[in-house]
Length: 401
Image 1 (cartoon, rainbow, N blue to C red):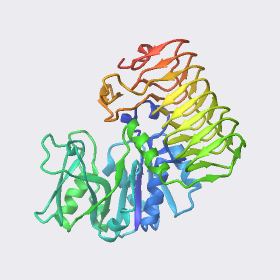
Image 2: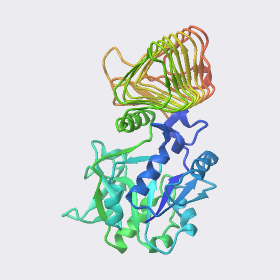
Image 3: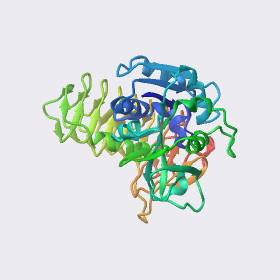
Image 4: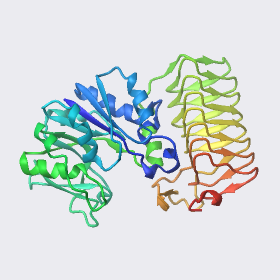
């Protein structure tokens, strides 16, 4: 099954994490998000991949230059005008045969093989809030999809589009669709036409995750870290204490006095300690550093992120080359025990998580003794003064705070 992998979008709902990084390249358990989608596609039977890049496309292209699980063709969508337009960009690279389309920012769990075997079809999942998705319309017996309604105010069903499709070969000629009310040429219009032309099967997905917002990136890492088996290839001091499913890659270093509780991943070039405490589902990315007396819980450190001394970071996502000054403290719990809210495109949106810390864009830096409130964000390159308290975001950077 030839497979188109959509990896061109910026992902504005990811906020500061995509200020300078393509969303498909955000880290999930030591591999870019798009890499997990690609490997799942190959495991399901993808014979070749056609990857559509756009925003910060050079990074995505560089990743696939060393991808050896299947042949890869990379094409560029020069202007991001929607998912149907992205597939139209890929169409010249497709053979005259059925083809799959996957979103490169979605995690799947072994369900793609059934979709590939039962196409034409669309991945389907049941969710608590279908109004945030495209809701699938089906025949009374549920055996065939008849249409899709994007983000309805009053959904008739909780069955939603999971962002995975198998189209007939003829669909290559159906991709020139008009712009939707949102001003985009959307693949759901192609799905609607497929529903009129052929029988489209809804294939139920038992587990999937649309990674669109920062707390969903944290959930993606929790999922994939939970699949790790213990492996210690790096340099671990004899006085360090590694507990559970911990992976220390070759070239990583864990110093004396460190307690490292799995599931956790310390990537090549990273260092932890001395005397640090790392727990929960935590990724210490390539060349990242957790220094003396630092406690980290359930967090993602992108490559090069550093927390040097005597700090606490919990339930947070740190972008590339973030640097937290000594004594920086992250709050991750509201006093009223309500879910923490985070800024998404200018609005405060509930994460649905009782515990959530901060989201820091690439290159953000804090002065010593900075306090970051639960749900705070810092844009790429932002700085704080020594002793500063950040509730939502620094006013001088135009934050919603």
